[in-house]
Length: 595
Image (cartoon, rainbow, N blue to C red; front, side, top):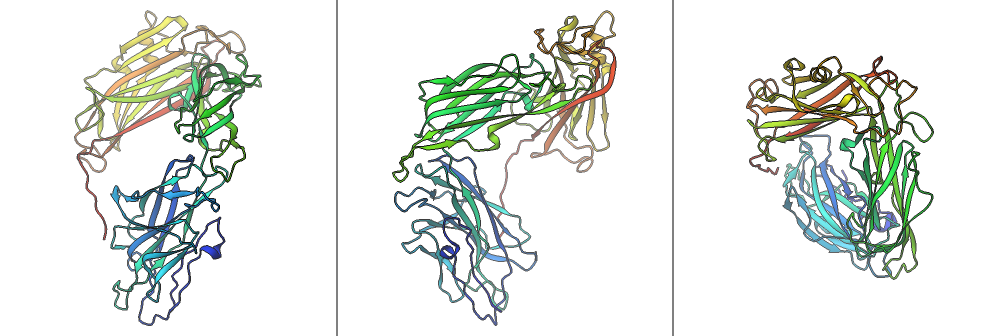
């Protein structure tokens, strides 16, 4: 039987022959072959800036197929940090280990940091080969070998994977145009003797995992103030896009161009604010987007921006709404059916930068990455619904016996008429609607002056049912409640968008640029109590305890009416949903470590 103690490198900066551990072979007549598999994976935060500390996670697992026999003893992880970066020549400009940063579940771990010598070698502090000699790890002179000892005497396949956290410091002299490889390899210090005891001082190593880290000069982020990434369509539902940028601390970007490409469905309104740290001039690149036709490009050039590492180093905020027809005259949402449309808005940035590293004295062109953070996904809707909640009496911790107030806000597109509107809410097992509180509705609509504030629901318009799985379904009949409030006729339960007159448009389409305000919106408020016991799950009468999760799911459903007369049912139905959850307060916790 032969045993091989080996580690494989996947570094892109050095040929495999320069970074491979030596292979050792030995006749093991009285020794059992260790079959435990020290498997690791390593990930680091993306979009990390020059000079910034980056968080890494190494996930360690015993991936052996035998959960009873293949146990590893005294597990550890070897991490190689590319501290030298592009050197030689000096200065070093890579990523170094942040001393004392390795932790597991909040517990500091024993680490040993060894710098690879001039020959590119580092002697392992305890791992030995089959001859009993310390392993000599091959690497790059000046890089760091970080040996992390895990807090377990043994680690078997039946134990769950664990996460080891540590930090690395990116040099401010690093290059944003290249990647620096951080590697991790799992291992076990001891193997078994013939009697099955872990007394053989010979390490067994797994396969190396690599995380290529590409530092950034700046990172771009696109956001909007739309609730739950959605909006009803029309000019009554204006929102703001914010393009923000963090530039690496003390780095200067010159001639920075910030560009936002508006989707064909989005109507630009105006720029509300624009800032650049230590920027003297901000010049709009023409032509800019139209204020009457959707789409277009909004682009500004900043003479310079000096970084602080914060997202406010550059900020551009502008107002917009989603139109009824897009840039090409096509409906964003078909008027005869209603529905939804996913809209993606993207931003980018570019400029010129000169490194402080004397090895790279020439000005460089830099640009933003294709990170998902540079775009914002928005769903345009015929009707949109958002849920929020708070504890009656205040506070942000929850326990059995508390009363929760749920608030359901909804908006109707300016371009649609709806009827037979219902709102269904499902409370998870462990909650029950508060019968002592009468639910209320607030509603505003331009047509016919229908405006109501905190009006109590009539009894028949709120129904509740306890379901077989212990949940409770509460149904609010919005249209019937509007009928009850609209005296004296009490026959109209419709919700009309701002571009839909009381008797319909009488024409082919609604006015896509209506100036009628306000938009049609409403709010339903009700309360629920957190029970002491569950009805069904996990079993009838089980106690509701700390750490349990309560959920609430709502959905609104409505029939789409013809916009021409705001009366004829088109046969189409539109819906939207929203969900919230919260966890009951924990009184304390305990930690267990397998050994």
